[in-house]
Image (tube, rainbow, N blue to C red; front, side, top):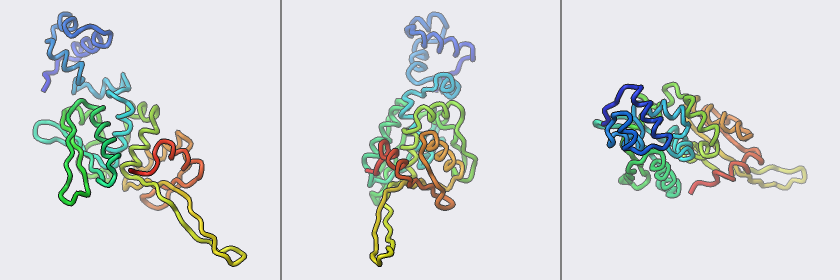
Amino acid sequence: MYRIKDQGTIDAVLALVDIGLSDYEVSRKTGVSRSTVQNWRRFGVPEVRARRAQVVGRPLDATSYAYLLGMYLGDGWVGRVGTTWSLRVVLDSSYPDIVRECASAMAGVAPRRVTALLRKDHSVVVLGSHGPDWRYLFPQHGPGRKHERKIELVDWQLRITHEWPREFIRGLIHSDGSRCINRFSVKLPSGRVGRYAYPRYFFSNYSADIRQIFCQHCELLGVRWTQSNSRNISVSHRASVALLDTFVGPKT
């Protein structure tokens, strides 16, 4: 673990790093060891990662973060494991492309090893990554289930999701959504039975807060939605489905 300096020293180190000085030059000017400067440059200062994200608006790869945030809100968990923190995302093994995309996003957001554990029945893959940064990158973590507590995005997260709403919605749908074909039959005046089919998207989550976040970001893109029941949001308008198809599509 890093030994955190006073806030003035931290700000000075980060400012000198941002203008391009080498680790040696930053160390010489601030008195902070070169190895510490190197670690802060590579991984950020854990205790100020959230503050820095507010300023920079880019926790490493912003597009990966937007996608991973959607996955976390649906199927993710952040908590303390031993002396560090862990991010876990539980995924359906039937969709290997989604598993790979989520693992890639985790590696893009934090430069740490990502592990994959296949459960005994082979139906579920649990992706995991350990490191102190996760508790700052996902401040929504807490005891209990997400739908049993207040969930809202903080300002720096909103700046990212508003800039990258497609990636965020893609993550939400990949975690707790689906694309299906709705089929129905109608008896026509002629007596003939007409059979019709059209694609639609669903987003299902017990948390009203998370459903609202999904709907708000759909509205940013002009996607029309309706609430089908207490936990399901439906997108069936033809133009809205066509828009979602351009960046989400069927799960694979």
